[in-house]
Image 1 (tube, rainbow, N blue to C red):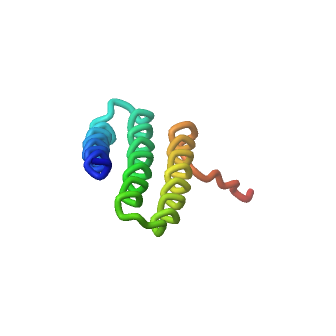
Image 2: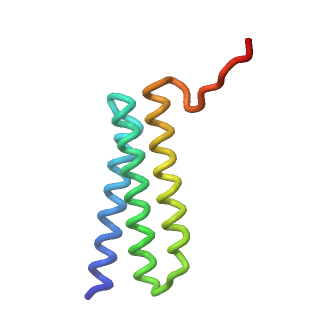
Length: 94
């Protein structure tokens, strides 16, 4: 019964990722696209965690941590790009 519930959760997470992909491609503005990409990252974290529970393994915990860090850094980079137009500011020598 619990396994069936987790499989249903994976199905709905997949639907959520598909909806967020649509928003990332078709988003009306850049901040909407960034939020959709952040949503995809969070859903991937949840999906891998559920998969780890289904397979009774702790091997995916490193992957979950890595996805969380990459999602956070990616969101910050996109936000800086939207705000300033560049991710890394370089000072030019005069």
